[in-house]
Image (cartoon, rainbow over all chains, first blue to last red; front, side):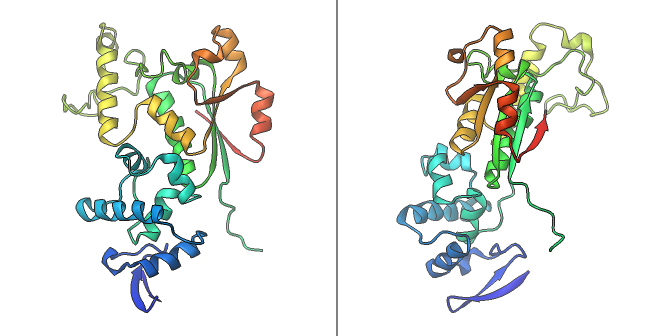
Length: 105
Length: 171
């Protein structure tokens, strides 16, 4: 656990860099985290996916699975992998200010 | 020089069994690899072809006969895991169907998709799915018998070529 000063705000992070309190998140933080994950700029599509994930997280305490995102027509699996290349579930959760997803699927 | 081990970059999974418990580990490992950004492929061979054959893929069964790992600890029976599943009971028509159905139900609860959807998911995630040529010839199968996600039918040699730099996992 550590804290970090980012976009003029202090956020709490796990050792792997996942935010522990999603309410500390904002879009400026997302942009910086995205760059660190190798995503140059976040599009509206990125935000649509992340907003849905955050809503689910708020309601259920966990981020939705890739399968759920596909089934609920939020984002097709193929597109999700293009939006967040190299580990979409983890990357999207990290940039969206959520804790690390625990599922295997 | 750092002594931190190299992360895994690529896996080639061989799926050689056609039972429910033989196929799912291959699918889960391949999908899990893609989720971590690891390149992944599955080579379906021998009875493993059942998992990609359109007419059998969603009818995979768990073996209730001659399966020493099967036990009575099923959700609705609530018996201890140390109690073996009697082979004679497993031989009764419909028991394997029922056990398989129950297992699939449990998996669905854990968000594990049925085989056809799972293959689509792995393929959409960029995983490559291959069928073994020799096994195809043996079972008299053609590419038309297989699901659309199979990108190629390979000889063993071709499989090794495609697996350059990969860790090979045999299931």
